[in-house]
Image 1 (cartoon, helix red, strand yellow):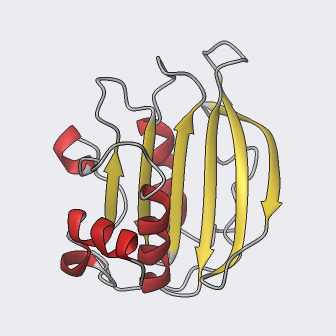
Image 2 (image 1 turned 180 degrees about the horizontal axis):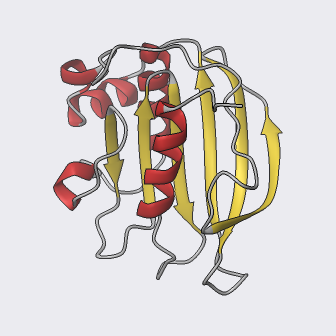
Length: 167
């Protein structure tokens, strides 16, 4: 572990939540978001990204909220990790790239998603990072004034908890 990683882990109190889940752990595999999974969003595109040693897959999705200007998009990056611990380690890697020294827990902002969740400081939620089981989700708005990512976070969390979907 580098000094920077150790500092970020201490700042986020990693030891208190690393490897833990709110529900009985499930190993989610082949998680995807299809065009019709989230009714208030239009899936514009998706691309596979190269995973690190901690992940099986990484997929980036770009959405347009149905009621927003098409230039104002939401980006969801899905990290399908090998384990809960790997998802939490990946979360630390992701938050280490943010400029803020610490991001607040989502629960303090009224957003209850994932086993662990961090979000931005502003009045409009334009970024959220959460882990549910072995899946890590990073959501970002492409604009500083929104659209807000909270509803999309709830929708994706619902999909994860209910994976695989019924046929």
